[in-house]
Image (cartoon, rainbow, N blue to C red; front, side):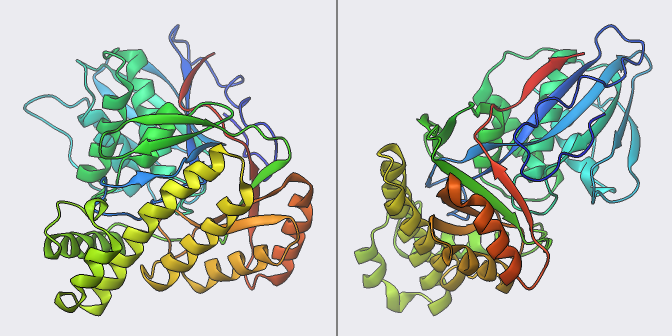
Length: 392
């Protein structure tokens, strides 16, 4: 199994080559990535908005395993921060005996994918999970695990290969087994990421556009605040309900269809809190479109300005930032060569993402480290491929 890669290393694609064969001819490793540089990731309910291109990270989740003949699934995780127990065993689900969520929490993501897998019947199997995507860091560790699991199941019992349906099945697993009403962005980029590209996603039509991101003078720095967040049962469902309330007051199916003028006209019918939530979303939709154009035009200064505007709106109107994230963003913006910085993921901790000149990366890390009140971890990233199979 892979050793954990040092932060900032250039290549995270070598981890499966020394995994044991376990005496099965079909042993293989399945790797799925996390994501960053995401925009619009705290949006309306939750699939009505376009999303600025996320990029698949070089960080990822590896699942190594092989089929068995006993109808039992045994899975061990080595992921740092996963709750106990680290090993689970359960029968392969059947129509009369479906799986259900429970403890440990990490296993629910795996169970949900198994339950909602789009082909069958599945055999029993033994598998080990390793991941260097920080748990609770806002870098899509759950989607990375879901997509790695689905890709593994495809090798045991192939489905029709539909990538969109694969991402949707993983999203459904998170909804039903983890209790998290997430959007589709994280699963889409983990399935469809392409090296050297960001991915623009229309979460209403599910259309995607690959956007080249290969400028050697550019760097993307992910900074982990090392403050953990847990979305299930917290603020995400609350924000979603508030957005739905605002859309209903405006007579819209989604805030994606609303304008700032319409929101202002309806302000007296909304609580101040719901108004600010809607103002963030409507503004973020416009920033998303502007940012996508800026990235395609290599206008990094405009892109960076929009990142900062997005963070400020997430902090003030959507109220999903926290002092640690605000510290990290402010420190990054003090560095010459930084275009922009913002929180990424669900907020209340986790990571920031900073777009900067490649030559400023080391300087930025040292400056942020000196200014931050906590202990930060840094990852210099490049866009990588989504989930893939690595035969052993």
